[in-house]
Image (cartoon, rainbow, N blue to C red; front, side):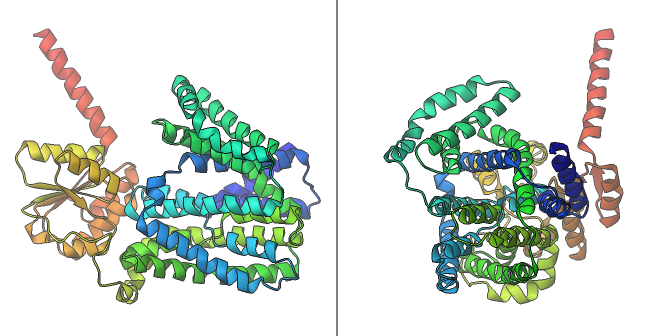
Length: 514
């Protein structure tokens, strides 16, 4: 039976990924196909699904940082969005067959956006560290915290007085930090993460609390350790594997009938309203239309947490079992719709830009465009390791160089080191239109994502930039395309590194012979 589950999940996930959709959409579809074929779920699949949820919430806890949640745009947009949706849900479900609690929990959970999809889209495009990427991630974490509270309400269980002892978990942080520091091998770090997540779940169950909350608190306890990002990356793939069991289980639980399918499409029709609400709130706190649009599009989905809460609500008999199938299909289709939209979000905005910029507030924007570049004659866009090396090479020759980067944390560190850098997102067409390009002799583009480099070259050529454009490529097919678009020169970092290694080796050998 396990082979059938895993094989079906893999094949369906492979098909959806080739269609540029998240694999979890395929897992849900595989569950429906297996259900239709007469395959049933059992306790083993349910147990694996529970482990997946615990690992998911543990990794959420690892990312919890109070400072990121206290930013004005995060608190105001995240809180106002949840309040508006809660109010609407309360009105809609007020007379829901007397099952107000279950209806309200489902309604609020539909306000949550997909953490898995948003993070994957931002990581794939290299925008997770940008201003809007950090805001989206922080809002997702804020939603996850509220989701945990909903799970506690939906469980409808009276916790033990000992439950308050879970609040003492932070006192064990020094011990947890020592264990993680002592676990130098990758497999030991991974095992420690699993042990802590499962231990949190067991402790929570012992005191009458959902195991998911215990796993989250364990993650919070470990948050802040220097190796936490490394641990999160190691747990990511394992968590996704176990979550496949959860998505399969949803599909195997029940097939939606005609009435349920109608309800699914009604829920999907509300997605544009959710996107419009996010867009309006981002504009309200002072973001530009472009940043507000791409952020709203990243959040315009239904969340995996809606699947979890619907499952809990149904088990607590607060809603009919059919709602589990309705929410499962609605989440799957919302992700299928959102994935391609997010992939082309910048292009979509370019098409809609004339109409959307009219809604911007006439204030000092948080993501403001640079008003001046001083006397700079050379620009380095993307201040990672490659960009920083180029910047220092210019400085060593006393050239007037300026760095641009979209990562606010990186900018803060560079400014503290005395570097001349400003905020600038290369995919923002308004950036190139604002910069005084006639003063610039040359621009180096070092962004890792090909789309950002190619679109920047297109915009520069459309603006008739007469200077030199240098950039990097990481695949052979990129080089010819970048030259075709108008790049002056293109280098492959790994090829250049090999050439330099050979040159240095030959020089050192010739000196030894001499």
